[in-house]
Length: 74
Image (cartoon, rainbow, N blue to C red; front, side, top):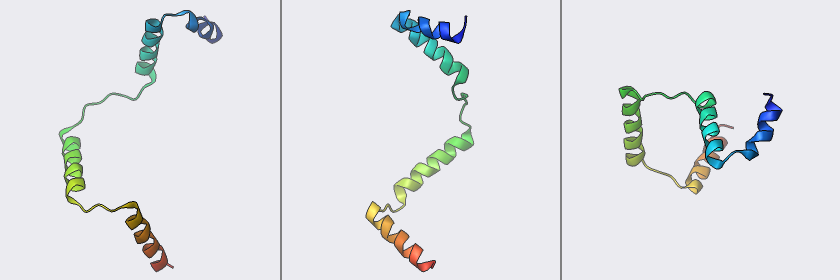
């Protein structure tokens, strides 16, 4: 069966059938599945702790800092 023939038949399928085909395509072409290592989980936890404890800046503050850095580099 050619690609054109397959595409022509897709609208004739039930929703559940199309969803099954979609899931199979995702399995074939999707991102590879992996298990997080203890090191990865520790790095994520550290990032969360850092985000919670480090100071945060508003968009206006970031713009002002960038202006200052850019003018200092000239």
